[in-house]
Amino acid sequence: MNGGPPLTGSAFTQKYLDGTPVSALFAFSSNLMPPDGPGQYSPAEYVDLIAFILRENGIESSGAPMPTNPVALDKMIVQK
Ligand code: HEM
Image (tube, rainbow, N blue to C red):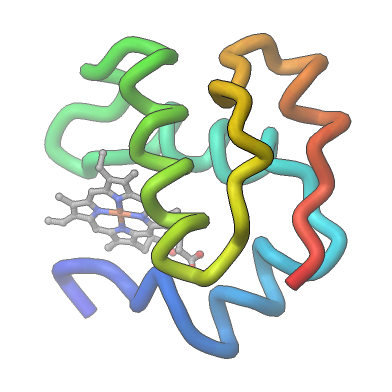
């Protein structure tokens, strides 16, 4: 699992897409990813990556750009 666990599928869904706020994915990714340089991207780039991951998981976009503000991300609850 050196390249990391799958970012789609049932384990990922249970952890991040089952009533979980998007802020959890944002905090994990921006604090710990990528392992060789955590935090090296801007908040806007991290939310773009998260939007891509959500889309790959079949989560529909509202059409509005995803916010980078942690309070707003806390209020975005993903329920697959
Ligand atoms: C900025 C790009 C990246 C993003 C947004 C990202 C995102 C994530 C996310 C959301 C998880 C949590 C998965 C889960 O808990 O099921 C994760 C875990 C992990 N990723 Fe990444 N990842 C990135 C790049 C990388 C790269 C380049 C590697 C390795 C070469 C990597 C290795 C890992 C590993 C080993 C874990 C498991 C960490 C743990 O459970 O403590 N990631 N990543």
